[in-house]
Length: 285
Ligand code: ATR
Picture 1 (cartoon, protein in one colour):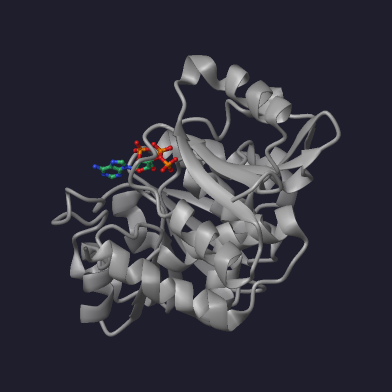
Picture 2 (picture 1 turned 120 degrees about the vertical axis):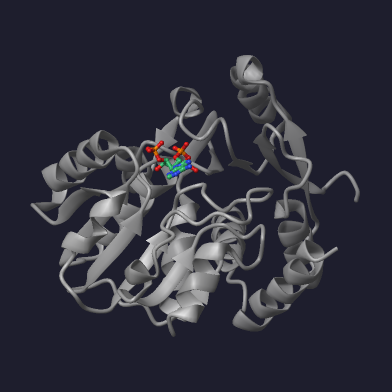
């Protein structure tokens, strides 16, 4: 580090277990860039001060995580149109006098889906959950031309509200169901994206849907949870003969997309794969 070191950081609460510093500092080191990335625990009441401070100190870029992804929007100079329609940002890129907000969570998921061979265009998809993460993912699937999206949620009203919002922009493609009504989905094999918080550490013995019957619908199951590395949802997908993936790649790729936006560089597939292995090891320690 010296007087020319560029600064990037994560703001959120809590942040102490974040893998983002590992991702960004490894990329910077491997690509020979003079950049340091750290994490700050920012109280929601001090969010505006944190952004003003970052502008004043000339931070090149920030990542934003829970609980600030929506609340940070009023403090931005600009916002990317997709991030604006989702209503959440996770990456801030320096522009004159402030930051432009992006949602690289979505870019991350899209890259992961491509890696796992999930084709959105003209296909039917099942999404479990209707919270903040689901909103971004439902927008992604709709904007990439999914034919039909079956949106399953414990609280039907939330699924209905999200369906209405997305359908308003993309036509009648999202069909909301109460989670137990998965039986109404036409028989077939689907990519299923699990976005609910069910199964997240420490509640590792829970799955959003317990019945084996549901898992007969799964061709590929993608859980956005990465702690634990194998969720009960993933186990049940595998038991039913489906492929199953956790959210670690999505996390990695959202970081890579942010790094690329900040530095105008391309991170190689080889380096991405190397960092993924390091992240897996870190998760097991
Ligand atoms: P995030 O931003 O991570 O998506 P969120 O907005 O709080 O978090 O959404 C959490 C999601 O997990 C919601 O879909 C929630 O269902 P409800 O809308 O019915 O609350 C779902 N969820 C959380 N706990 C659940 C549980 N025990 N069973 C089923 N779904 C659950």
